[in-house]
Length: 197
Image (cartoon, rainbow, N blue to C red):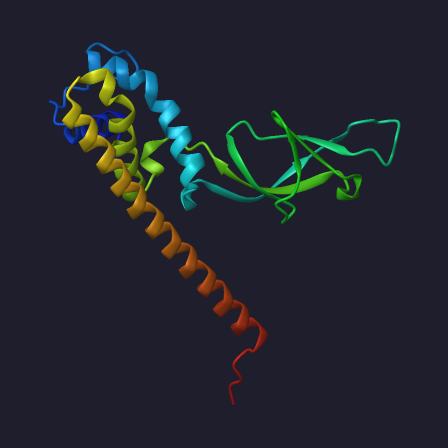
């Protein structure tokens, strides 16, 4: 869990440059300006691509409005949450219709839906250490061309990013497997409670 400036300085270290990033809100140095321009874009891209558990919102209820209020059988329209980067499921299903910032579903939803989605987590202190490392590598890969003309630095940034992606994906898969196994165990315990005499 690091601040945005610390993550940018980690990115600079990856490509072999001096860690001189000090402020992204009021950029002064060249590296400040580059990272300030690409930090939010890189954050959204990596959260949407990796879908880490800390960014996954489950079963958030949304109220909708009929597309044609005069027709009681009209499909219902829902506005996506502002912090939504990617919708995983609507009412437990992966099939739904998306138009920009709207979701349309059949009228049988009774006016509300539950959605599972990936949230844009802006506060870096809520991120995991693994995502911090991935983000630093992603920033290095994204910004290396703007900070140095050294081809070796670009190759190093690319290699580090691929390594971090691989590590993060394997950790995510392991966590998902553990979560699924735990869910099955809990379900079995509930179905077959222990009897005490």
